Amino acid sequence: MAELLFDGPDWDFDTLRRTTEAIETIAREDLGLDVYPNQIEIISTEQMLDAYSATGMPLMYRHWSFGKQFIHHERLYSKGAQGLAYEIVINSDPCICYCLEENTMPMQALVIAHAAFGHNHFFKSNHLFRQWTDARGILDYLDYARNFLSECEERHGPAKVEHTLDAAHALMNASVFRHRRPAQPSLRAEAERAEKRIEEDERAAHYLWSRIEAEHRPQDHETSATQRRHALGLPEENLIYFLERHSPVLEPWQRQVLRIVRNLAQYFYPQRQTQVMNEGCACFVHFHILNKLHEQGRIGDGAMLEILHSHSSVLFQPRYDHPGYSGLNPYALGFAMMRDVQRICEAPEAEDREWFPAIAGCGDWRGVLKDAWANYRDESFIQQFLSPKVMRDLRLFALRDAESEEAMKVTAIHDAGGYHALRDTLARSYDLSNRSPDIEVVDADLAGDRVLRLRHVLRNEVPLDPREREATLACLRELWGYEVEIDEMLG
Image 1 (cartoon, rainbow, N blue to C red):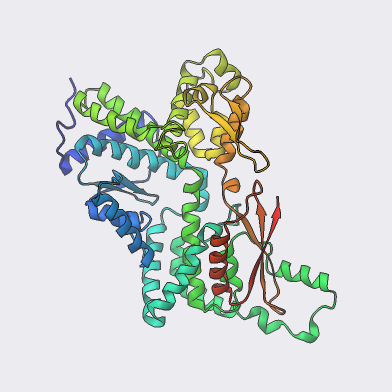
Image 2: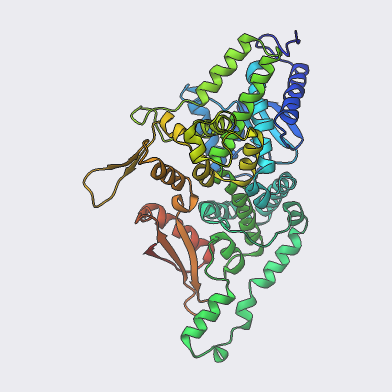
């Protein structure tokens, strides 16, 4: 009989190393996962709370909002109103996995399989992370950002730096490139040549001003406006990017601060698009690996019961009328779909052959899942792989809440007539283009009134929240230096 990797709840670093090696063997040889080198660190409760406050990053610049988040989470934790994550994993090369020192050894095995191999593989293979993030350069870039902002505080004062960061943070969610752009320098290279970029910004800041002379302006207003918008690259969806390049009032160091915030917003953007897939992949990987180790006799029954209890708790999906319901649990949905893909590939039913003729009965569930992890995001994964069985198991139904109707209406249920409508509705709910405001810069007359004009295209006729809109416009005015106007129009 195989020797147990561990016995009981206590752990030491030799046990962690031995267990990690056993997990890695199955991850690479059985599942065929491709992962960054792992850097597993054991941290205290306070360090975990600190990681919460700084968006989980190991290096981060100072800002009051991080301290506020720390106090918020610390008070909830001390009152017993909130638990702590068992781990935090960083999309970096090497992949950093923080494990809580209070975890028992079975829990350490679970979180290492979940984060150090499940999330790690997803970060390295998924096309969104490959396209938009620089795993090798992010840690160096964060170190550069922290040092740069510290120097700015010394030169210009903490209050001015904080004021710029406040405004930039308010615009982060509207400051990402949603479509592919030409290849950009790595974050490491950008940090190395930051001083040169600041000098270039200083010259660029006055480019338009130095060449505009009143007597040479075109007389045709429409032609002039078209040429102006073309010269400014309008319309522009990334608000910070536009401000960074064209704001008449920002100093060079402020443009660099905006560039730092913009790069961080872009770094986190793929995670917002792949929560169901990312967590589903990690849950599927840890479930498969730990069950394999149990079958081999390397994890005991008692430890496996603890692992399964935690696994089930993470996947718990409250009913829609449960007091704790807050929507679909991304862990539950992702794991259910990936286990179902495995079933369809190995033991399909007639319904599966009708819905998924390309994969039903193929037997290669590993290849199908790895292809999905690499090439899909949440809405496309749901559109492609959500099966009638999962819809029935989760008891899904669709609601329409129209302003013109007195009551909400159930528009689709999990039956023959509703499967396609349900799948389409659920997929759209995970499409960020439907969940995030569609705002872009459409005009800015630097030689005229200097008003920055934005356009908001309403999704499903839903306007912006008035209070948040005015607060965000105030931040825009601070960075632009002049009036900012926004027009709303139906999509």
